[in-house]
Amino acid sequence: MTNASSPLSCQLGKLAKQAQMEFTAASDYIWKSPRLIEHETKLELEKLPVYFPNDPQTAKLRWEFESRNLTKVFPYLIAVGNLFSVASLFETYLLLLGSKLQDHSGLPLESVKGQGVAKLFAYFKELGIPPNSVPLYEQVQAAIRIRNCLAHASGMLAWSRDNKELRRLQASGAYLSREHRDMRIARGGAFDEVRITKSSVGDRLHISNGYSFTVASYLQQYFVALCGLGNERFATLQ
Image (cartoon, rainbow, N blue to C red; front, top):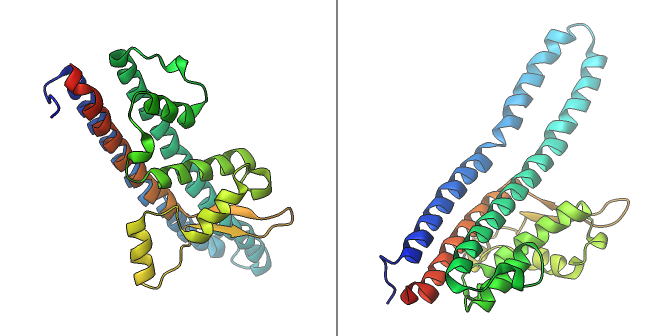
């Protein structure tokens, strides 16, 4: 049994609670952010007869420009920006967890090679806290791969070193938890949060804002469970 009153237990409990609060706030923002598009669409439609009461041709040209932003540009920026934000928040909390465990284990973070999430996961494994033993590990890894493809290759699969794996994740729906996949199959729905479309320069990865919202939940649950595993591993030593 873990010692719930040990210094490390208190620190990890506080860190998990703080992460829950921040991810919950981020999830709320992600859920509400598409309302910007609804609001701006209404405003733009109201402007057309006011700005161009006797010039339907110019009104049409303006709407063609604005509607492209509202139906393509803005949804892309919202979905991708939200994914980047929660992935960055996740990395920050992994680093905070690593710092606390470093202080109690005596094993410096610098002793492990790598960068970003891969480095921190390798560090936790060295401490006897295997990241792949925590539920939602596959979905967390999928989110990081998808984020990296969008950030470093603008979604172009041919430019991503994870090309093959990203295609597998998209085709199988494995970026979703088993529970979510089973629910989707039972309802006859498609795995459409992550899509691959054709472009003039090759296949391109796209995500919906719904995916970013789901990822925020996965990352929150995973991190809280990881803190619990760290507590089990070290708190008894306090």
